[in-house]
Length: 552
Image (tube, rainbow, N blue to C red; front, side, top):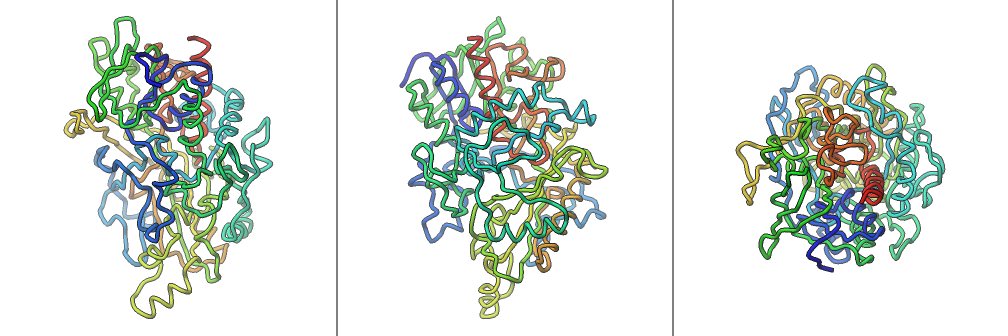
């Protein structure tokens, strides 16, 4: 399908853009999706079957390094040295006196970062949606958990979420569509350590099929989710929403289409989109525009569109575009267990502990966190990383230790609430531009004392869990304290009811530009206590698209 005009133009094909395309095409709208990255064929382009699989992570066709710049980060304190990232062989990962950036980790392609995610499919904790009114920080969500519940259900059914029978912290009006995955042997052993500490490690809710669905097979537990799923059992956006949207005959996806400019009129409407692909530059008029580029690239695009009536950027009447940036707040500890664990096998994050997830669960700290096994996310699933990070030495002694150690690593990761502060934001870089002469997004990241206290709690708890599980000495730790390294980013186009303090309304619609919608994690008023944002982005998109349809 190729048309001269479309009812809706969507920029971005990740969680927000892909689910919006599905919802609107299903309701009869003609939809065009412009995706800057390429498409991926999961059956031929994910190289998990080769002997060199471990040396390759996700096969990026377009490198994401250098797409953003980073402001100078804060100085590190000597008395927080126990929060530094380190390895027993190589030493400190950051030996400077300031935080450094390992980057914003994402995928440029049809399906967005869902192509390399582990499938975590989480609902927000209802208490995390009332951070301002109940805890005096961040901002409240302009809708209730009950408002999102029916859309969560649709999203879970569409991608095929497998989860436990009960969810203590997130009320459900219907069960998960698929049965939870069984825990691996390593996770079963870790659960003993959690129980010794009075904590519960439960099956994680995952967009990974435990039973075949829609021509997609059930998971084979190869553990390669982060490198791209070659079987399509993982519910990435391309093989779920996008695939179904294309089948409708109402949706067209144009990969390799980089948006350069948005046109506006004097009636507060977006009139069209200029983009470039390998055939040249093009213009597409639009009746409705959805921007779904993520919490870094969405504010970048909005801030580049400056007109006499919008001198500070499009939809930036409040001055909030780019502000309230929230990042992945993470701690990981890894240790060897003396017994064979087979920890290189199974789903990367098959289980999770939510006991500290609510905003008031951590003593003397506002904002919660979660804990989960993380051998695969730490890339400790193959012999190369064991040989360079786990077992030191060389020659026959090294080989003997490798035989004894392989598969015995247990890792625990804590992911915590990230609260907005004035030092964390996304702005246009005044000096660096891309190949199309557009300013890069510059990420400024700052951790305040509350974040550092939360990290300290996560570090202490991870260490205690490993000890309770019977591991030996910890050989590696990775921390957000000294390294910015984010996959989940939020908050730069906050939604709310007050146009003076937010960018979009409760339906993700610009307060001023009525045919402009922002549908990605940039609209989140708070990050949650470790929840993966993909499912919530999808629920917000489905809710917003129903609003678009009702008001077309």
